Length: 500
Image 1 (cartoon, helix red, strand yellow):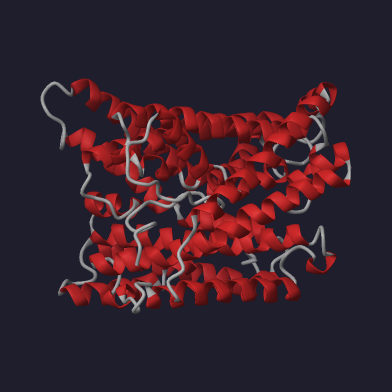
Image 2 (cartoon, one colour; image 1 turned 90 degrees about the horizontal axis):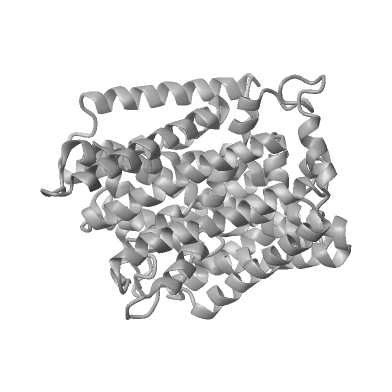
């Protein structure tokens, strides 16, 4: 199997840029890689996702918190790639090195869940966008949409089994397809921006509806409601340091990270805040996926909605091959290094991870069927995908903090670097823990239902290595996970929480 995605952290689902040809990369190509790895399909639904539970002030605060936290996480991956170059199996490798096999396994398991559930969310987004041109697809999760998504999934499955990986021209098309409509949207929104409407949204806060106004709850609740949204659009921040070994100058990696991250953040902030100056909060919250289309249509008419929907279809649809491959690559890589059972590392004659691919796509298929029962399938599945990826993010920050505290890998004369990395690791870890809190009890409990089956997979992998599966604190964590999964199942069965 070609190593296009092998042993690399994931990048944003709607981009997955191709690995560059041999040669050194200067600053501008590095910036392009950073931007391309972060800006993906999630940006197309930001107007409604951010406004659904937050006022403009809460949106601003949410982006400030996310900007600081994600930048620190970017620095974490940049630093760890330099200090631990031997750990090249993705973010879960840092969790495993820093906190043991069990933590490493659960980070890998969550990483995999996030990857394939993200594909489920994007399948819904694609067919929701197609409904603009063919209303038969509805909200992207009716029967005809599920059948269409399933046909696409298994068609791609067949191509991958034959050894078809990805092509550079597909990535070039999807990059242009997503950036052109986004930039058009921003330019039109700037011209159409109604400052009075924007200010009115601030003035209306707290006007007879509690601290948040408009029935949105307290300001803290509103900020929390934006966290999984902002996390979703930045999933792939770990991909910023993937190409550090190919940089002409190592210093360019850090500069490209900051510049590229700042550019992506600016686009996200503009898309979400400019929309508030065009439509009211209830109007934005009620837009269907992709909500950017509804906002642009409100300003310029049907051609605006057509442009955005077409951009989303090409961008996310063109990346579906890459992300189906990537989702299968995670358990395959884990099977090779012993984190998952060796069965997952099996390849066919064309080098395709056949067992991993089958398991992954069967899981995608199962959840595609479940989208039919969801009232808001896109948001539900990307919320769960965002929660699932929290373990590798939290423990990556924790590992950077641990290295800085112990002084491991730091030589004499590096005290300044060590103090800086101590702050970076601490802020990144605290940000990760804040995300866990902001995710909310309902989504955390439902996520345990997906993590609990992994306990059996972990036990099998340990037996193959001749290691005892659960001992000491690992046993306590495993029992705690089972208890939470049981509680979640009970709450779902009694109707206290809704799984979909």
